[in-house]
Length: 209
Image (cartoon, rainbow, N blue to C red; front, side):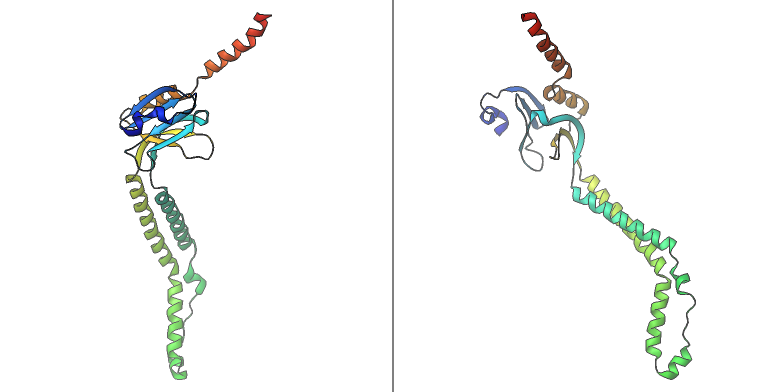
């Protein structure tokens, strides 16, 4: 079990263990001050911690290569823009029916240059079609990248943390709802308990005097 069985060595002075929740090979230790997670079978750090008041809840989530998702979205947006541009812009109509007189250009010795110019005009006349083809290919690539991202996702339970810090993740068990309830009951202080404490504090001075 390693450090999972030596939690007492990680406690601060006056800190005590209040609850231990085992989820598959992972362990979540709730102390009076912190939430400690031990995840030896997951990628990343084996041990993480957070101050208990910063935990806002527990939910089902997943860990994955976020770079793949961002790349998929980026490729998809660019490809869609390219396809829409190809659909709404008619380059052939913009260029018009420009044709060079081949006989005249041959006589002036400019046949090679004019041929290149005519080839460029033909290319730009079909540019909208090329844009649609490239856009469709880009969308296909985006879909493939997203599929790889989805297949590489690791289902987890996320211990949600307030602020910009990344949530803590533990493996998702077969019954995630039961694990979520167990973790929330262990970590989150019930508002009813706080209300009862507040009422007791407000009543005590009157009773004393």
